Length: 229
Image 1: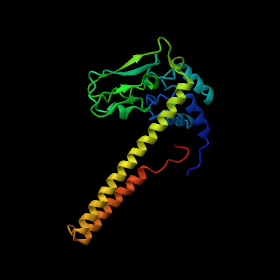
Image 2: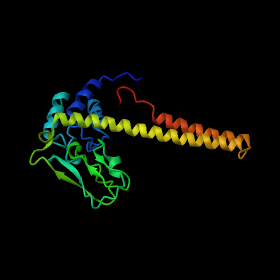
Image 3: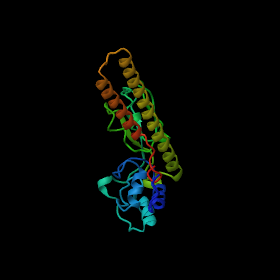
Image 4: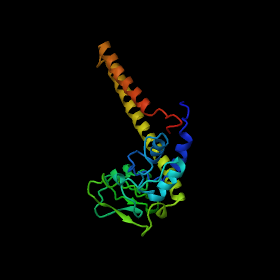
């Protein structure tokens, strides 16, 4: 296990100061990655539109860096909005469900989907994946923006839901790889048992391909070091 870096405590503090919308507008895959980049000096503190001006002030206080205006290249501060699915147009493709980082969209394949409004972080990641454009973002905070439209309790819940989402996705991937590996092994055993693959060299080559695939799958699911989790 890799030892935590000196920046790890600062990264934890910065992550706790972010709104946890997991919107990726900062240019990083999630809030934790952005916090780590700031702690390592690789990213500026003014790249989080959901946190807005107040969020920048919080990050400035933690890092000792000067307060700067929000970088417009990453978006603008605005009222909080939640996703709303037009149920008459939803085709049940499940793409929005897969894109949601906090699992706030419920539904099933070929069935209508619904957004659980109070759990939606307004990340907008469901918008570009919808093939029929049946999702709209609806403002729900009036004139309140940034942290005035969000709360520490909501951020904590979003962080927990995102962590569960990641665990679920990783679990599903492991289970899928296990199913595919079992099928591959069964096919190889069947070929060998019925002498359909009689050439020892060909059989060994086939086995090597399967073992390499299994090794790649295992590497994908290797636990991350403590400072990267």
